[in-house]
Image 1: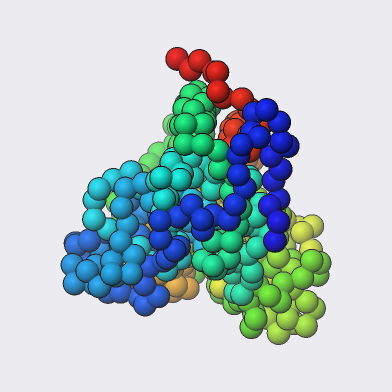
Image 2 (image 1 turned 135 degrees about the vertical axis):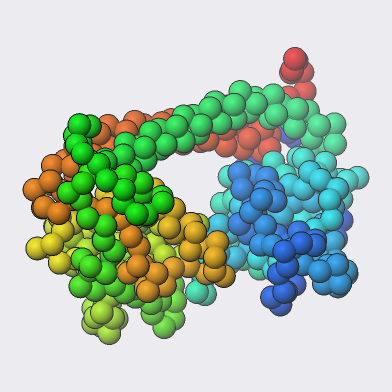
Length: 443
């Protein structure tokens, strides 16, 4: 394999070298244990792929804790230390990286690869920026393989390429990058906070409407359910099972991701289910034969889809009338409704409200956190107006309010993506020698 990036030799980078990354590492790339340790309530933090977030290690997203005994065993193979770089080497986030900025003791699991700089050749922060740049990311993406999920071997990573200037130029490049991206990162953070505020506003409007109705002068009664509170006196307290004629999910077909097609029957996964609709990015497809084998999880128009596992648990949407044929995997629950009893679009709004979210949260904290089962879904409780007419009226009011907020959120997300693209281009230009940092004055 040859490098995918070019230095475009000039007076800026004529003395730079392009070499395999293994030549600038202090130790061969290694990883954590391939066994599953016993997780404890306290002990040594145990981190995996989910802790790699936005270029940093997030200890709040650790798998849990392990015993000192297990930790001592695991660090014989892989002992993390400050300035190490971790790369996710399997799963949906393959290629994402983080840098260790703590002296705290912790262990990692096998989905993470540890990359340690040989400091007499490469500054750890320069290595971090290069490995996180498009110059390296593109090499990772063309080199990974697929099993049930994308993955890349440690030996493969070691044979990818990096551009190396002198240590002095590396220091200047790091200073340049950190100077230039500081304001970009502040903007991204501010816009992220704004999105959270909009989401809170959306949720507040939604939950108020599906628990109190639209008439502020309506007589109220105690619902008898603590997290619902008072409801209009003519409303009823019901459960999902009172309206659902089917609750179930699909499965991952034999062969996993390898059997996915470029076209065919849409195969909806949790990443496709969002509050503002079904997202078609990264949509998988299955064959007619597999779809026929999975008859029970074929979706129908106006089915409610609910994510029942993982980080997106509780996210819900409705299948549009004109969506056509599709199927779902085991992480997405289908709730099929008796449409004579409930207006599906209203029910979808209800399932997206904090009334339901709180119950899902409590269910997760009272279990092994592996996800919701169908019995728990059927028992989700809520207040509901008894007539389809009132349900339609409330749904229309919520929809109009929500669409304005969703449109604004999407606009801000587009702005964030453009800022991230600009940030990436700055780093790429710097680490491939296209910017002369030798005489730059950085205040």
